[in-house]
Each structure stands twice: as structure tokens, then as C-alpha cells.
Length: 421
Ligand code: GP9
Ligand code: MN
Image (tube, rainbow, N blue to C red; front, side, top):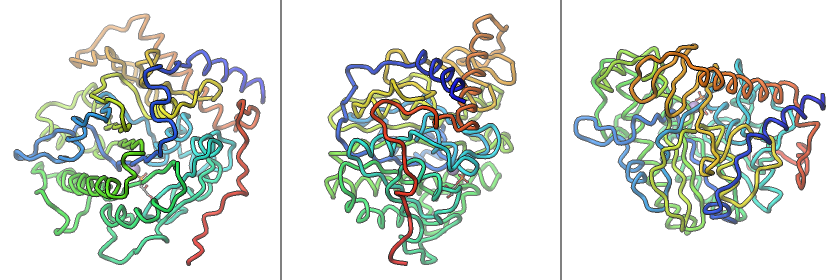
């Protein structure tokens, strides 16, 4: 009931990290373009396979003068995989410990980014080359206030354009550009990629590097599909530059979750050339995060954070203070950002401590550590954060709280029927 939401608000208010004046509003009024980098893990960045870069374009962005590259950024997903990643970045709420909030909590009240920005004059849209009901997207996007959802019915799904779950990334981006250009600006948009998805099948003509040689089939081809996706992103950037959108858009790229599960640890030992200890395994949950902001000097950022932190980071760049919203993450660019990354199972990582199944390791060396009082407090903080987030989602508690200057979303205003079908 409403006393539960009071406890939540007290917690999130006490965690609030106020914006860094250097970056607050630095991207005000810009379009937002999210690229959901399917299954992209951070170890691919600057990885060398037989003397070749796997992701040369993403690698080049680590050196781009208007791009932040975060090299200690983690996915925090559980069973909901892609859907959990989306849920966190639209709401700064954690996904559920079991199942997926997308599937089970689609009708809840949310104060999601598309709705917040919609009330500031933004048009919002998702682009994805799979059928709209997958992960219950066509329902929960209404609760988030997404104006448009371009699913596979908007794309030419001829056999040569399709692989695995849907559109291949290259034709997907190519066909998306006219639809993106038609949106009223400023827009808030998200492109959910697909080609780099387990078990990483790839047509021979799309493979521009050879497979890895671990002997584990899906691990080996992962490098080829990642290269294909990297090339597709480069092409997309070229389209954005040609259309003039590039100079007026914040582009955020994030890996959604691991691509290689723990079932493939022995192949990963070959890939990394070292043993996959518990601390290395936690480190493997790093995913790339890039934020391109026109006119803002970027660089490689070492703060520790996760997907829960993306929404406040973005809103602050757009000049929207998050203080009155119920958000469990904090702005990565704020000096008050808390360098602790909770995983959905209660494990966590800080710059010094990695906690796995109630054992503790040195984050830098992987050596076991004696548990201290501080570690215990961090563990309790993580538990509390996860539990309070779950209470919000399971109890649909945002029904009981409407932030100042926010109008609740009316789901009946949204409909994703493709009129041309
Ligand atoms: C499906 C796609 C994949 O539409 O987004 O979801 P995942 O299997 O990665 O959760
Ligand atoms: Mn995914």
C-alpha cells in the first residue's frame, strides 16, 4: 500500500546523486538513439583474434573525442535477458529474480523514460526486426508511453534479410533510416539488434573474419557475428551522418547481457588465456557502454556501474533532474555516483571487492579476501536495494505515487497496429 511506497521513496531519495554541473543539460533537446548491442560482452573490445580486431568500429569509438566509453560497466540481467536490460534502462528498476517483468508486469504503472520525455516534447519509438509480441513488448511499451513500435511487420522479411530471431542487423538499420528520419524531432529511440544472438549462426557471405579456434562451436562463431554487428553499426553511423541526424543526437550503445554463458568456461579459458575463477567470471559480466554527446569531450571512464544507472545518467545529460523519480541507479557522471554494482542474485562488484555467493575476492587480483564489516554492509545495502525494487514491481507501487510535473500514462493512447498490413 502507500506506506510501502513511502519507505521506497525514502530510500531512493537518500541514494540520489545530484547531477554534475559540467554535464547537466549538456545534451539538452538532442535526439536520443539507443543501440541495444545484443549479447555484446566487453572482452570483445580491443580483443585480437589472429592479429585482427573483432570490433574495429566500436574500438575506434573508444578513441572518439565526443564519446564516453565506460570500461567498468556491467549487465545486471537475470532470466529476462534482453527484456531485463530494457526494463532497467527505461525505468531504473531491477528486473525480477525469476521470470521477466516484461512478461508478468506489463500492465503496471511506470514512470518510464519515454513517458517522461514525451511530456517534454519528445516522440518515442522502438525499432526491432522481430514480431511485436515477443517478450510482451507490445503491451509493456504502452505502459512505458512509447509512441511507436516498428516491429518486423515494418521490414522486408525476405529470406536473405533474416537469420535466427529476425532481421539481420545490416538490412535492419538500412530499412530503419527512412522511418527514423520521418519521426518528429526531438525523438527518443531504441534499436534492438539481433544478429549477435546465441547460438551465433552466420551466412558465409556475411562472415568477414574466420571463427575462433576453441572447438566450441557457438563460442567460435560469436566472434564472427560480433564482427558483422560491428560493421552494421558503422554503416548505421554513416547513414546518420548522411542524414544530418548524427550532429544532433546522443547515441547510447550498451551490451544487454553475456553472450557466452558459464557453460562455456573452458572455451573462455582459451579465449582469455587464463583460468576463469569466480572473480574472472564476475568480470566477464562487463558489457560495453558508449555515450556519444555532440560537442561534449568524452574519454574512457573507469567508474563502476551497471544498467540500472543508465536512465539517470541520460536524463541528467538531457537536463532533466531525476530527484523526484523512484530510481534505483545513480548518474554515472555524478561525483556522488555510488561505485557498487549489484547483480540480480545478490552478488556484487565494487572497485575493490567482488562478492560471489557470499565469498569475497579482490576485484583487481581475484585473490580471496577475509570478510570485513564494510563488505557485510555492502552486502546488506545490495539486498535492501533489490528487495525494495522488487516491492515496487511486484506491488505495482508506482500507482500510489505520481512525481511532480508528471502525468500518469494512459495506455489507451497507444496502439502499435501497422496500418499498412
Ligand atoms: C528477441 C530478442 C532476443 O526479440 O530481443 O531476446 P533474448 O533472447 O536475448 O532475451
Ligand atoms: Mn538479448
